[in-house]
Image (tube, rainbow, N blue to C red; front, side):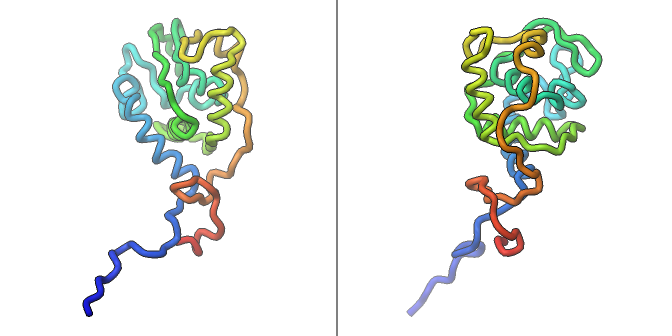
Length: 183
């Protein structure tokens, strides 16, 4: 007649939830781990070859430019936080939309950057399509210069914005109702 008790934390509980900014940033920190070698875990680069992400206008500015930097890389001279760099950053793809949205949201809100915004997976999917169909005809993954980024990719990525405080299901990233009722 022995009946095993339910496992602690198991059972028919509601899905785990968090604000979307927190959810994407947490995932973005994992994606960013492959960037540590150059930009360092601090996001401040190495001071010699690799520029900082903290305080970078390329990170906190137009989201389309940032997406193209991540997806395609950069070559040639680029001014970051008042210093000119002349090295190459390889493309960081392939990435799916969730990975791109996560890492963009993470770096835009870490290392002293405080945009307070969210790059949604929908926006990231648009960035992947833009990268595939770039005006200069270069294939995805071909590095861009600072001038090409500014000329061909100014502006924010298309897509619906979402309040960073919107509570979402951590598995689906779909908004949930009352967060008190969900936990």
